[in-house]
Length: 583
Image (cartoon, rainbow, N blue to C red):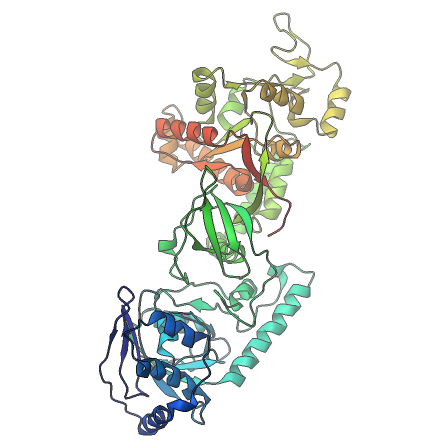
């Protein structure tokens, strides 16, 4: 239940019980005689009120047939009160938080320009009171002065104001429009600039349009990355950017629990990494409407999810907090690592190599340089996808600790479903080796280098002066036999397989901790386990967008069962593949 009342009216306090839609009436006295007398005048001339706006229709839909015409008119007359000569005077508004909290957003709080209401949620407590509007400046909350408050201070005060909130507000549309004009001007400058966002000057007054719908806040950072926060959410007007597609399918690149997001304007949609979502409305900069698509193609109930911009903005803010002060140390570490590594951008690869099997997720020089240049920009949110029918069996790539055990068990337990491809090499054939069984022995190094340059290999490297590699054709041969080709390769091979139209099932075994890794392998030291954990973190950061699923478990048996389940679900023949459309 939620109740919204104002002291400017001596009429009944309206309580709307959403389950029964019944109306209760009590009297409420006013401390402002001129406002009370003015409202009496409006009530005595109710026959002059005939224009019904959007919110009036909303009231009429909520109230049952037992609601009297007089009570409906009271809500309408309170809204008309804004049009009288006293609309610019400070006024007191009482709100009681309901299931949707206070139901409005705020902007401002930088440079002393004040805190303004920028959006009112339809059906929320603020909307049902009829006493607040966009452009109202909040002067105080529960007797706490907000005239000089920063955005963060105002947001915190509103969040912790309690169930009953006493507001003093003043309608100042000119000041609000000046603030919006300043933000719009800076937005245009940023959109038209060729520079990257992090090189722009701080955005003046652009602290977030905090959502107070659930009594909580969406606390986003100030500065240039707050640009997207300036757009109203959930049917906002004026500044809302609508350049996105209205409807599309995406693959979620992160887990989302709406119960932990206090800023939702409606019922949230829970989802996990890899889930397919049908976004039915992506026109808002902050929130999208979507349905989760099940494995059998059905769509579940509609819910609210954070937009791509919102997800990426919050993650950038989190990364800045976490990485602050670490860049110099990380840069020096990377430089030392690169100096020690061989040049050439080819991953170390050798069939059966103990080193490769234990830490086969080594990053090449090129991968390290790429990671160094893109770490801060690589934010995972949503990937546009389309359905495609496959004519082959998808290869499988398992990355992370325990990958070798998973690979071996899959081949051993299901030899009719999983197989390995034969690698190529330039080294001479040994007497007991068979061409095409142990390796494909390439006649010359020059030939293999040409094939690598022509992208005929998904991965290649050099060991003891000889080249080794896995060709696209060898993967196809296994796939065309109806088997999943198990590949012991790095994350870069995922991208190369996709380029070759061989969409792999890429599973990342995410370790929970260093201790978890040691439990999986009792023979390794703490230093080795810590090194594996750090490499797993780098893998997820660099290649996370290419993973089909991220798998965790308490035991190896848990992980193995989840791997088999995902492979079975993703086997096809109809699968979701990345779309070329940009979000």
